[in-house]
Image 1: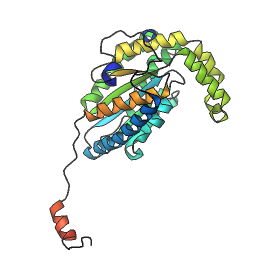
Image 2 (image 1 turned 180 degrees about the horizontal axis):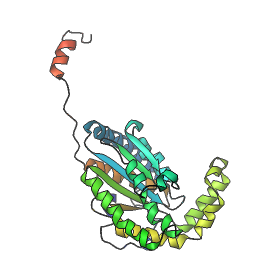
Image 3 (image 1 turned 135 degrees about the horizontal axis):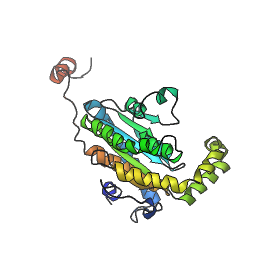
Image 4 (image 1 turned 180 degrees about the vertical axis):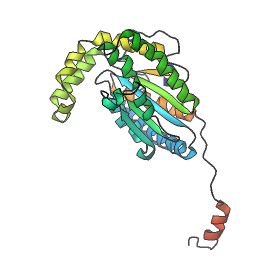
Length: 278
């Protein structure tokens, strides 16, 4: 299955997450097979990232959005964590601090976009300003409604300057979220991840789904596409995300840069003797 085509939100399409099955898994894939494919994809991602870093002409921005427990951290750890930290970083978007609030809402996103040769993963992203901001009425509707076009304009600007953008929405069901909350309660090592506010926010589930629908409908573009990944099965989520990132990076037509020194001269100078070496 071509996951890039299967889970792509086509620009201009109207999205209803209620029509997309978060429990979906490829009938040709099993958990055992998926783990092998993800491992192979991780090796390929390391090669592609090294090529991106060496070429030093392009960059890649990967945005992850999801409802709480949707699997953003898991995707970073099991898939994107395969990349070399020297050329890959993660930026987390929490409640904005006073410095960030003193700037326009896109300032903190632009501050963390990848440099040439780098990959940056946004754990949550600038889209919080059409999600949390909207749902909690932090600014008037007349303000946040403008954010969709402003986000599209910024992403287009980045793409025109060789920053490629792919965005994943990790789609889980309401029942799956409750199951994952319980798992956190039952696992002492995950107690730090849970709070009463998580359950309070669940009461706004329908509001969040409506906001996600609009985000996906208004902001999936040719230059910065959204992919909706069925994420109830963590192993399938990892398979789909890793496969799409590999396919996308292979399509960047990256090339190794030419050597900055005379290779033949170095070979003759240091390896002319029969034994080689110096």
